[in-house]
Amino acid sequence: MTQPRVRIAPSPTGNLHVGTARTALFNYIFAKKNSGKFILRIEDTDLERSQNSYEQNIYDSLKALGLSWDEGPGVDGKYGPYKQSERFDLYSKKAEELINNGHAYYCYCSQEELEQEKEIARQQKSDFIYNRKCLEISEEKKQQYINEGRKPTIRFKVPHKELTFNDLIRNEVKFDTSLTGDFVIMKSDNTPTYNFAVVIDDIGMDITHVIRGEDHISNTPKQILLYEALNCKVPEFAHVGMILATDKSKLSKRHGATAVSEFVEQGYLPEAFVNFMALLGWSPPDGEEIKSLDEIIKLFELDKISHAGAVFDKEKLNWINGLYIRSLPLEDITERCKKYLKNYDLSKYSDEKLKTIISELRERITILSEVTEAAACFFNDAITFSDEVKENALTGDHVKDVLKKFLELTEQLDFNNSEDIEEKFKEFRKSMKPLKPKFIMMPVRATLTGQLHGADLSSIIYILGKDNVVSRINKYLNTL
Image (cartoon, rainbow, N blue to C red; front, side, top):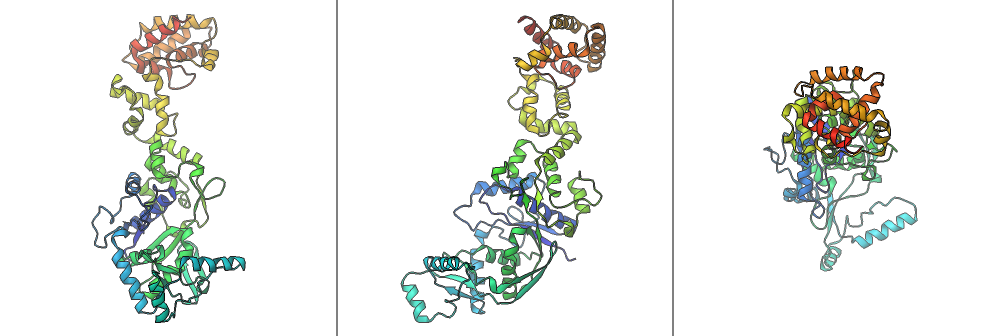
């Protein structure tokens, strides 16, 4: 295989969608697997809806996922510019070339006329196919339209034939081009349509493989015809199945977060999210689903991608993310968690104790943002007790006695030594017999944290330190 050149070409009319990100991932993996180039191109011809903030979101989201482009905005390359809005002159020239070669023509039909013809087709329950009435328009009629102020579009003259191409995922695909109709390649405002612009850009950037979603299959015959009319080599095509919601409909905002930046903000680790996205349509041959990006690249084969839709299973994403949170180095996870602890006074604890907090909490969270609430008991001195906590941990004649004797124990503890705390707390539990362990531990836990479950109790005592432990126990005892 010659060095492949693949691209991702998002439109800055919204934040980077997970579907586009998954397509970007497959393109990136294919390029790296085959020592090729991964190109980013911004398709911003929709000037009304395109926004700089969305464009920046695309850049930030791809970088967050580790999908750095070899060529594109901000990265030098000899095939630029890499934004469609900066390539308008090129589209006009290529359209004129097609007109001169007899492959395209000016169309003066008004929108009203076309709508009338479409309505007639609907009434006849048939598909609308443009009737080519402007193909051989007389000069006199053309001048009449110009005098009326009509601004023409440019239509591509579709040759009628059976068109066949080999999809690298779906194998042979056939189209009858006579059912396509002559399509517009340049609008009346002199801006290119999607199918025309993408072909001109892919030719200009020497793209060898077009890997994209299956919703683009219907565009493929039009694009192949344009390649042929321009006497250019047709790239290889591969159409990936769509990402579906759990109800098997197309994933949309009504199903929850759909933008990559939303997932990152919630605390999904980019490494975990990339791992999860790679499994949306592809399966590792060794059956082991938890893989780093480098490992995925080594095992990846484009023709092993399923052409069926892939369900975006949030529970599986949470499972994978939880595994990554628990397996990545503690120092790394602690640093990432600080973003979600910014409303707390982190100077309250040493770096070592902060890592201990995260070490305890990461066993119980699936996304990093959950650490905010989980860590509250370590930073908020005003502990509140829910009815459930009161009923299950702070009710009974034994509670006051347990807490008073635990206060006595604090005088014997080395609060700088977690092992000493654990050992003496074990001895304390034995000394409180015949009380069962839960009647000893639950009152202490509840008084210190306001919770029934959570981190190891010895670790909680170590993290809080003597002053906080004694203060919280005394505050509760004073309410009895």
